Length: 589
Image (cartoon, rainbow, N blue to C red; front, side, top):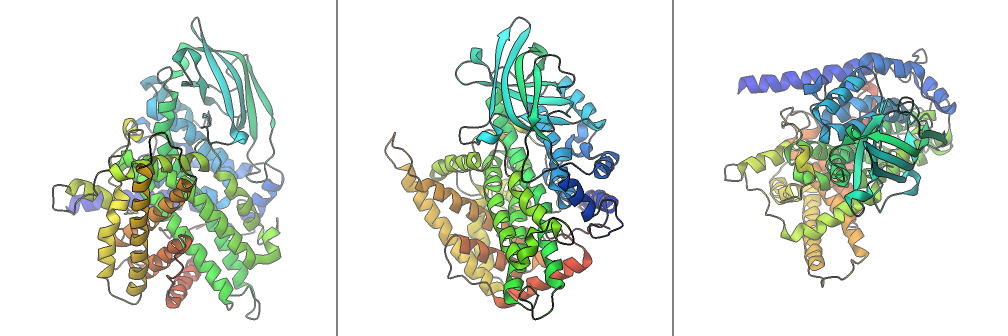
């Protein structure tokens, strides 16, 4: 047992050292002498480009190794760690995180999921040598026109002829490798097929890079379209079987839906940190000062929302390893819920900053940049509408799913232990990803299944905030019961009857309930009882109060003493330069 514990501690220590190295290299955002400080990122954003010094630093750090599995020479073995590392980049510049990170990862994940051995090795070599990738995913029916994909690949002797346009693609002209999905008529129906091909500069004739599309956020990203006109692809460019692109995308979405929004918490962290600095700078008589109840509540609510988002992100990224069949729904909940919470959080903070929330330079310019960037991160082929559809599909099956896992010590102990491990932020012992299982239907809903036992544990808790936590947990359990009843009625509708628009409200409720279950799970399993904030009921009580409030059960009130308790944590983390997520990571040192 000691050996296992020591190995786990060593693995977590190695992760923390890697993040600390990246944070140290990037330096203090507020240091005017730092060439990677806030002023330089804002100036680059004003020029609609990435900061060259930051790109060079990430190349020197070997950021691409974070996207390559360990067995292929990289550092990728856990999705939650990948998100933690990239938060350091998103904390400085979301455009840098997207263009120099997430875009390559999204494309590479497709190759890891269904590429041949040679394709996987070549992709790993490309990334580890500093190359870049991009992916032109098919846009599902409930998608968006901005990213629409209209590509067709028709068989011809020796391969395929590719025609059509991808309207918007990050780094389109700069990438060394492309993953594209195209309709293949010969495969039948609307069948999609994936292809792996060189970037536009080396792919040969028949590819045109379209003019740059300007965006209000992530302005440093160069977003362009690609037009294919009779572009010839050899049969060796197939990524997976012909007609298998739809299934391949379904395997990849659970991996990518959760990691991207989790990385983006770094951007939201900067918005909160900037607002704390603003409040600290104002005299006691100012409505924006820390003496103002409105300001105090805004800061604590924002911090609480970040913890809620991180709890759900943690569960979803770890579920891809531990409960792959359930990760499709959990990752959809992340992609659906986090953009809404983070956008509302930034709006509430903007009220504290007032006119300074529009500043594009100076001490508070990063806030306005974060406010513009965050909504753009939520775009993508597995965006909000597509994620909501995945949740609705799960809700239609919810009444028939298996019972929740039994308590540890019974025949269901392995599943119960897997569920408990979902909530442990520093637990490194995860099985490798199994892409073939990610698209299979779930046999249960472990997160909802964990809620009744956790609520019973909450009722037995003692301490200053235990009563408030118990009240909020009871309200969440009531919401779960009502959700199950509504889903049962939904399943009883006559065959062929259209779904009521009310089902989308059920998707909202489901996402919030699983977020609440994630918070309670992290409180119960995520930290030893004597290990600081996560072990205390105060943050969980406020988190559940926020969630239950969003569910319109406004009778549950957060304890005022809990608000002051978390405000002290907000200010301590600001003074100590630690992140506003589950990890309290030292930043810029």
